[in-house]
Image 1 (cartoon, rainbow, N blue to C red):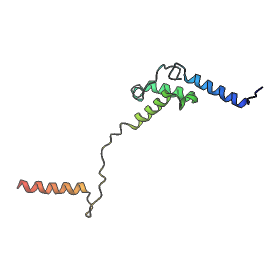
Image 2 (image 1 turned 135 degrees about the vertical axis):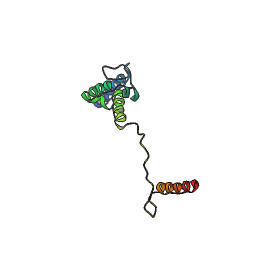
Image 3 (image 1 turned 120 degrees about the vertical axis):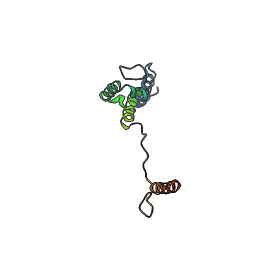
Image 4 (image 1 turned 90 degrees about the vertical axis):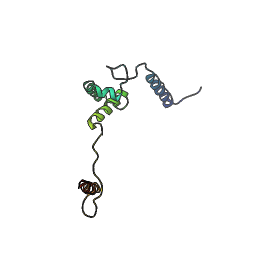
Length: 118
């Protein structure tokens, strides 16, 4: 008679349960949803996003695992940070007279345009 350790059978049972759970027909574990929504879809529906985020917060097992919880959280961060389309800043180094390179170039253009008008 062969004797298998109890630990090995428990590991095998847990592996089988994980496989069966991952093969469920529903792509998301959020109870009110039947499909996985994209970040853009959540961004377009802020009221729905807040409801999903609240539900994910109430069920900590879903928070980092369920795709809808992840997408809703990413959508919240994307909306909060904006488009990222910020105006460019003048970060050029000042010249020896204290003006930036852009200001120096502007003054040169002003001087040239003034001599043409005479």
